[in-house]
Length: 114
Image (tube, rainbow, N blue to C red; front, top):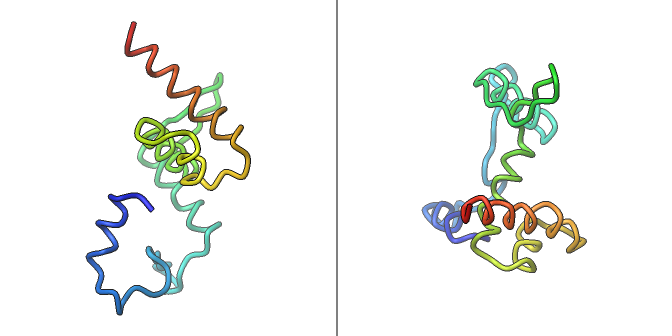
């Protein structure tokens, strides 16, 4: 758990710390959205907001829940070592962390130098 997340949840009294951390309710059913529906909702928000994360020809990719996950990984790649980052990202294979986050961090470092 990251310190900023702990600061957020520690504001909730310990006796009330049960169930999902964030519960998003459907406006038309009043029920908690499952992971798949919540992911689709985040995609629609990214699209309506015009947050573009990739372009390939005429195809445009808008921000999604996975992009939020990636941005978390990129931010923390600058603060922790590869083993710690792999644990935070819940990667079972250290190569995944190295491929997507450590190499990206090196590219950003090089950009900053130049």
